[in-house]
Image (cartoon, rainbow, N blue to C red; front, side):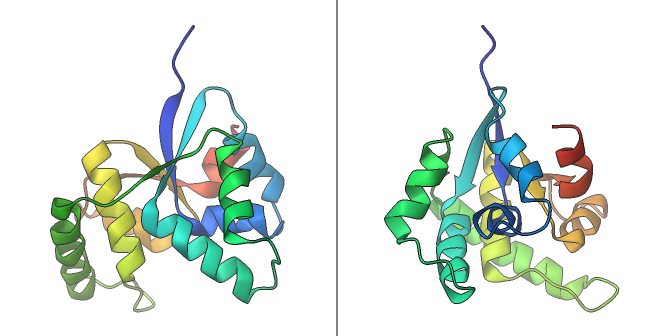
Amino acid sequence: MTEPVPVAFDSSVLLTWVLQELTWQRVDRLLTNPNVRPVLAGPALAEVIYTAHRKGNTSTPAQLWAAFAANGAVVEHPEDDDLVRAAELRELSDDHPGPQGETLSLGDALILAVVERLGVKVVTRDTYWKGFAAAGHTSAQVLDYVTTSRGA
């Protein structure tokens, strides 16, 4: 039997699922795919819980984590070197904003730093990440949510 491939999820994708926004079923197919082991960088989990509550989700933080864990998700916490790398990524982002002035938030930079360390792919809805990676500013393999989820 083949081991599931670890794939990281950005909070934007996870919020689509939690809030059952348009296309949430695509995220569900990714999270429940037996060939995928969902990885949540610690900052992604914190951001999902915070944002979900601000958008009206009434689940407790423990219930939200339990929903992810039930699908085999694991949390990967930032390590010391990830914190340093996140600061570097923020600086690079500030120096190379997107066409609309987009830059990485601290949470985004932490997630990308963890993903770089793990050497796994990350699924996001944030279009800036894809361009940031394509320009060589991060070694993270950024997957476009729409393209990835259609194939799931």
